[in-house]
Image 1 (spheres, rainbow, N blue to C red):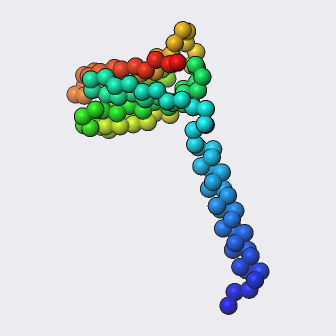
Image 2 (image 1 turned 180 degrees about the horizontal axis):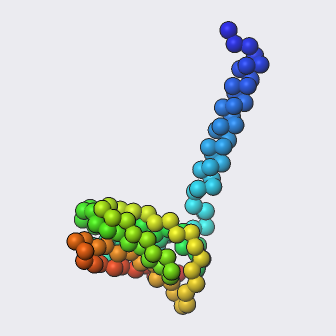
Image 3 (image 1 turned 180 degrees about the vertical axis):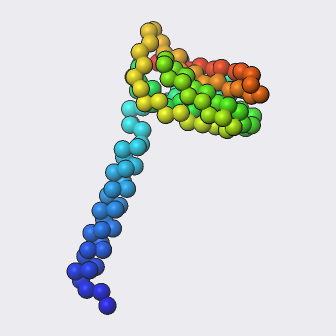
Length: 123
């Protein structure tokens, strides 16, 4: 038999854990003001989430044929690559100044060769 005090402690612990989990989700979720822009080339699609003209949140590169390859993302001084996948999200979270427009790019390499580079222009 549980005592009322023990039950209250359990409820308080569960409530605290739930509050922490919801807070973590709010911190990692994209802000409501983020815009998304995407475009596809012959072999890959590139999408980016950004705020304003200069702040890039992330770049997602996806192969159109679903086959893996070395996916790359680049914008300004940011360079990221991931091997043997068909889709990857690169977290940038940087302010990158460009005038008049910012080119957010993705690339696909297979067999040591560059297959395609494709860019999204923002804004």
